[in-house]
Length: 159
Ligand code: ATP
Ligand code: MG
Image 1: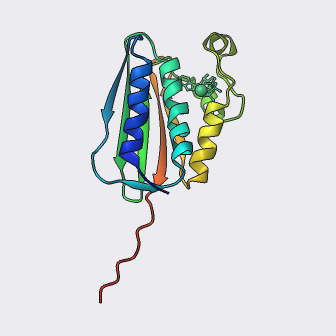
Image 2: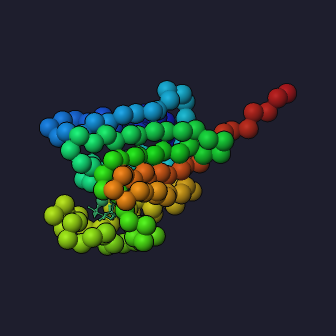
């Protein structure tokens, strides 16, 4: 169906704000209030964003801020989640979307997880005609972004 992207992102961030109430983590949003529709499966897109924000929460330090932004570009909308966590070493970046891949097994074991979240996120983005990518500075933080094409507009016929 047609989904209002800003509303979907706001709902997910609202939920994480509530579930992290007792943690020292702050969310900041840059989400326009415009009509921005994408075509797809609401539950799957919610899961995509869930998987990325849950990582940002998991790898954020105490007092960390998580920035969530939605940027309408010419051909696609880009949603980004930026954290101030440990980051991902450069050599591990090409693998983070692989199934069961986890950076630093010892560190990750304490934090729990199976290493599937990002593989699922990539599958969902691809199934919607979008992309997903990451940029990270070891020790400074990580930004995961994904893009979604706009919902196809019906052609307006002038008579
Ligand atoms: P699951 O999502 O299945 O519970 P997981 O979070 O370990 O487990 P992924 O979400 O696929 O698995 O992430 C893969 C690995 O990428 C993580 O184990 C972690 O090492 C690294 N990673 C993912 N997101 C971040 C982040 N925001 N900051 C630092 N490292 C990250
Ligand atoms: Mg995860």
